[in-house]
Length: 203
Image 1 (tube, helix red, strand yellow):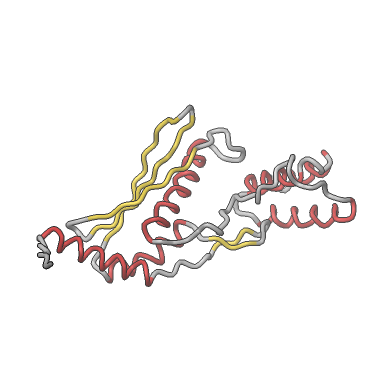
Image 2 (image 1 turned 30 degrees about the vertical axis):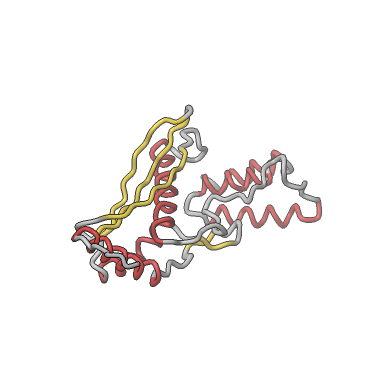
């Protein structure tokens, strides 16, 4: 049995867009240029992805836009970021969401929205550009160690974590955020005197 494939003008344009997108996805290298010194791991930011993908988009005659929208879902403000690649005629998009915590310590409301926007944009681009970040921790990852889930710090390594925490806070760009990460990780076992001493490095 024979079939007839009809290629319309629109299908042809979509085929060109698809071919160009495949080139971008296969050639893209977005290294993890950011470092979380406290957690001792590297990660990539939305800015790292943008820097790596811009030349590939230009070389393949494509452009990318990213838009944000905010809405309230179940009492929480959620930002939806949508990344769209187009060849000027057709386009393909991917979206991702992130919640906004307006009471996040160390951040004002604008910074909280900005942080959630960057997070959502990063994962929207991950979906569109086939970047696998399933094992990639973000800058604010606390490794699931809450006060109730982590083991108690023994007396033997008290001084070790405390000195590392001091160096981490002193070297951080956002010292408030660094202090909160340390407090979340060790607050249940640290003394009030230790927490107070660490707080002094935030100022």
